[in-house]
Amino acid sequence: MSESIAEGLLRREDGRLSCWWHGADPVYAAYHDTEWGRPVTDDRTLFEKLCLEGFQSGLSWLTILRKRENFRAAFANFHVEQLARFGERDVVRLLADTGIVRHRGKIESTINNARRAIELIEREGSLAAFVWRYEPQPDSRPARFDLASLKPITTTAESTALSKDLKRRGWTFVGPTTIYAFMQAMGLVNDHIEGCHCREAVEAERAALQRPV
Image (cartoon, rainbow, N blue to C red):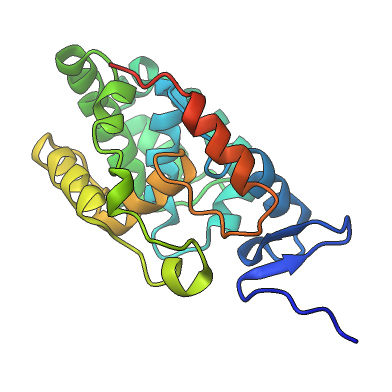
C-alpha cells in the first residue's frame, strides 16, 4: 500500500517529512533545515536578507542562494558602514561581476538601502528592534499551518505596514511580497507546514527568543 502524505509535504531520502518547496536540491534542503524560519536578531544578517530578497525579485530564491557567497564578497559582506560608501565606480565593477545578479537598479538599491539602514539604526537603536515590531500577533495567523492555508499568503497586513514604513524612510525594492518572504525566512513567522520535521524546533526557538527592544 502506498504511503499517504499530506499535501505540501515530501518524504526525503533520510526518511523525514519536510516542506515541499526545496524539492530534492541538497543546498535548498540545508537552507530549509537550518535557516528558513529560524528567528534572527542580528542586524547584519537581517540587512543581508532584505537585500537578497530584493535581488530575488523576478527570480527564484535558489538562484540567489547559490550565489550568496559571491554576493557577500561583492557587497562587503553586507556591513552597512562599508557598503554605504560604495559609489559609481563600485556600481560599474559590480555590473561586470558574473558571480552576482547584474541588475543596475538592484545594485544601486542595495547601496541606497545601506545608507538608509544607518539612518534607521541611529533613530531606532537597531534594525532588529525595528523589524521585530512588525511580528504578527498569534491571533492573526492561520488556524492551521497546512498547504491550503499557507500557500495563498504572499502578503499580510504586517508585511504591508513594514514595507510602507521602509519606503517612507527611502528604502527601495522592499514591496509587501518581498517583505513577507523576508519575515518567513527570518522567523518573524513560522510557515513550516504541520508535519514538517522543522516546525516544532522553529516554534521552540521562537518561544525562547528574547525579542529585541
